[in-house]
Image (tube, rainbow, N blue to C red):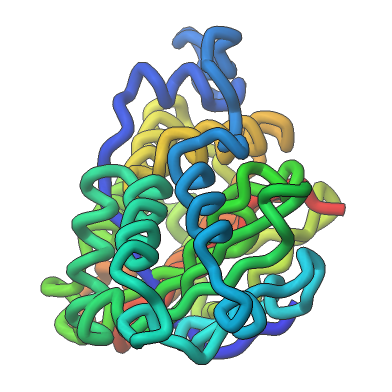
Length: 327
């Protein structure tokens, strides 16, 4: 997998009851009810019939031969595995004459399909402020949705999104995704709320826990390869937290995942559950990049066997997410 620089986006939303049904059992919760996937959850991943994927099929079918040659690739093409916070997967931009108004409407439909209402609005604002709007982003198609595995991908400054109908098995979001915002005033950044929420966990730690969780320097922001159960994860294990602290971690994951559609959230939590639950995750906070020297840690990372969420908040936000079964 090729990695380069970083930029990205996100918000809030999922109700607590739904999230509780999907989370893994956490021994540290003690007397509270276990966090288990509920058998009544309709599905734990998007499908080819999901709203976004249905729009992807129509978009693919609308492409002319000229368009297909420029933006369509085999499903296993290496471009699908590349992640970068500021790049274009193909040369044509959405606002170019290359696309029709109907095709641009389909692209917007796909964006709405892979996000929550809050997430869609937040990412629209991010794209406007960082690049002038969605028309300055690019899309690509991998595979053929009419015949088998496929993935639609959007890239541009501080954003990578995917829709794959679960073509990539046991991998959330269809693969690594990126979000960010170029605003360098931390408190004005669209994702400062995430930093505040994650720092609530740090403030809830006792002295020994805080010492384990707070590290000097962060790894590279694009170092998000999944390590599996034999991996070495930085910071403090959620398994070493008290029940109220674990509950706060749960609320934090809910907050971080809220910009995305429920089907992707369901798949994330099923992967977390299968990989050992919330207690399999570690949380790390970094002294590096403390923008206002206020001990509100602007760089943080949540990582486990099948989960990496790396947030670099200084000098502005770049975030990389990679969630899936390793190996």
